[in-house]
Image (cartoon, rainbow over the protein chains, first blue to last red):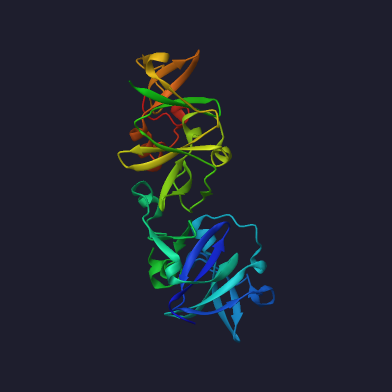
Length: 148
Length: 156
């Protein structure tokens, strides 16, 4: 996948932007490949997902971000990411499409909202006048996320 | 000649000095950024800037949070801490101070959260809002409800 393109995915109505560097694959249908019995909520893992014959952890960032979603777990889309400890799955409501990096305009988080965003996101960009959050995977899964 | 913008949200009639009003927009899309403070309903985008839309229902005793993003007008206001927006019905108007009566809020009983004075125009009382106070209180969580103060009134 080209590095000057970005993936936009959605949690509820909110858009997020993901660098493609660590994206392995986007899996649209996970219904037959999830095992919610294998969860570890302390690490944000809501299920295990079978991917390329291995079980990998699946993380739902909507829970951490307190975003309400109407989708059931089995109807979510999995974005498979490469991490320090191997692949892991990011469960999202919708993976929109790829956009050129130049499509995004930088946008400051207002001073008054900086405190509330701390720990969850640090950058927002505008895509066609819509704010999208720059998703930082390390905040949600992996050794640094556990430390938080 | 001092002028006020007069607006309404739910049962709250409020006034803002015209000098503080940056612009009045209609029908801006509201985006529910995650982890917003409880008294911020959403953010708006104006001139490539994000603007917190404050939930004025915190200064009333009404649960109108879901109405905040549906109002016809969004009033963008300059505060010491950056631009903030307030929701308003489409009945807003701008009047000069001399067309109404100004009264200071003096007693504790009269004191309302974020209100510095009252402006009466055509027999309707408008709360003149202290935007700097509200911007910081409503976004930094100081407004947190306390059972002994009857809601959002922390400052008595």
